[in-house]
Length: 239
Image (tube, rainbow, N blue to C red; front, side):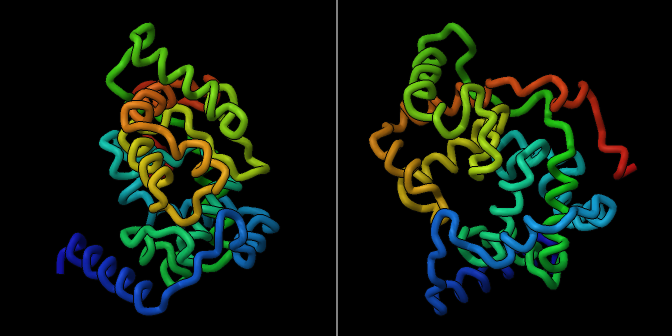
């Protein structure tokens, strides 16, 4: 079987098992267990690199994902957010059948491995050329997105999309536009089970145009310079 065939087969098995088991929804931040354990551990960055080698096939050695939105940028994300999302996927609290087989303890290890790989990822510098939306600054669409963000998103994601680590609100600045669109739509439409219910409520009235405009704005937000890699940077850990 080819690697793609293996991934597709694993995804089918996972989706089927979830449907049969009726896995309970743990909720926005009620996973407990492994998440809490991993957060209390000191990351071993050297082991985190070894674990990340499994992840790099999709998220790329630099942690930048793909600008077509297939895989998100992980580099520079808050460690608390990475731990939570990885733990949620492992606990079947967030549906991700493609990633699930590769995130299991038998593939990467237990809570210590979750802490280790999260510690490694958060230290990676961000993509200087992420996939952005179609509307540049000073266009009406950009300005509409900027206002929507100011009116609806700042309280949780910060004035520049930097998030709040202690509350598990992710850094969304400079994330790939097409990935942002997909996640926003899933959250708005109730398809992402571990979404913050406050966010679901806040964006429930957004039209598709609203969604595109605000995500265009977010994709164009600039992280602090010290978090961004220089042009042409390649992860030396993978040389």
